[in-house]
Image 1 (cartoon, one colour):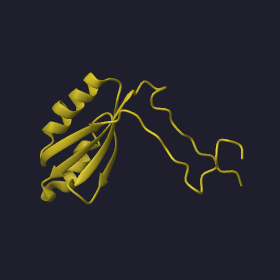
Image 2 (tube, rainbow, N blue to C red; image 1 turned 180 degrees about the vertical axis):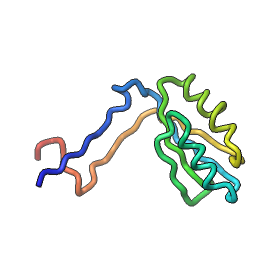
Image 3 (tube, rainbow, N blue to C red; image 1 turned 120 degrees about the horizontal axis):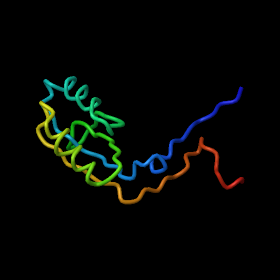
Length: 106
């Protein structure tokens, strides 16, 4: 049986800016906050986490201006969000996991 994996190149699709946003929420409104976040164009993933944030949101935008609008005009207006802090990805490196084949042809 052959198994294939599709890896989407977001930059090739015009999504040049990636950000992770840590959000603190009113836990009584958790389900509503998550539901509202997924209605925002550009929100790709919402993860409930441990640490100083309640959730981490992975977002993509075509430009810094679009990301700014997403954070300030969309995320900032979701009822139940108490605070947020965004981290714009400057450069990313990945490490192949032991179960992932190497691209070097070894």
